[in-house]
Image (cartoon, rainbow, N blue to C red; front, top):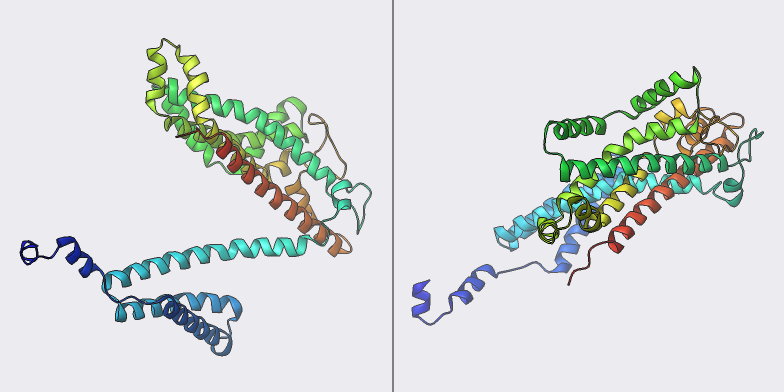
Length: 358
């Protein structure tokens, strides 16, 4: 580098000259990719008879190999390696999208057959064959999910606050371990626990909506605890110390300083937790049961939910079966849209409640 400076060349210019070199144009990249895709389609349809899915799977490695080989021949090794890694990441992303797009496409195509106003305004009372709707399941889902949130959110948030702000001993470590264990509990075990609990007070054969809410709370509380704990940990310690320096009590610091700073993440985590439990089927099959009537009493009688309605529509289609299958697909579409709406609400809340920065 000193020698180049002696003859009047800027070292930065020399470095730029070394880094710059021949590069493939975008047109060349597209031509290579198009040729590889065409070759993959020919191999899949004409030689191996794999169909569209095989064409997609074969085209990916061919595009990656052809692009890397051309880049290695035209460009230097650094750019060729960069292109290879970029193509691998892109191909992995596209592979992950295939099942997601496939599921959404199937649900939308089959669910639109009964996705009408009648399906949302009628239940299955007295319906045999065609007709009917999911009003009873939709009402039950809303009521049970709301009760689950009422039970889980205060317990989860308060537990998270205790673990971060107050708990520093054996009790805190025990609670953390129990939360980790609860996170991995199968959903059917939560349903069995709720059934055994209500069996003590109401006897055998108990079926009611509040039992379903308790079962879902067992699944939702660990998620809320973990979300609250992580959001509180990322609140800067300087905020707490500034409040303590002004003589503010700890409980007031937590309520008026720490929690508002973490409100966006906690709220979004709660909505995501609700979206996670709203599609559970096994615990509701055990404790909430199924019915064809619209039941709005959380503490009396069986209560239908969308996952259970979908399950029985596929399990017991009746005669003719197509009408029940159409209702099942429409319920699946409604459930998928409900989960998507909840996730969008979570993102909106996170954006609206995020701390304002300069």
